[in-house]
Length: 101
Image (cartoon, rainbow, N blue to C red; front, side, top):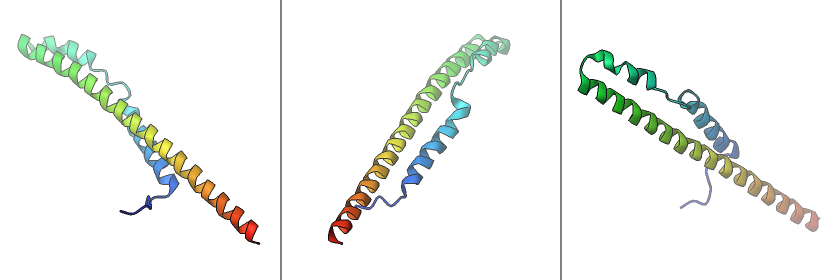
């Protein structure tokens, strides 16, 4: 197992940004108007199934968006930790170089 993360710090931040950008169109899935049109189908069981589907789909989309937002938050946090650690290592190396000079 390699101790190297294998990515540059900016890659994590870019990944988080890309996830949040993908979420923009699904921030609020609203199928209420579609569900209300179910009565136009002319079949009560089909209309009921459409209402159930729309409600379930809205909840599912909200859950997935929340999960993706949490993932993006984690990537941003990892990026910050990675950047801070990298800078601390550079500072320590520079300090040792100064002491040896």
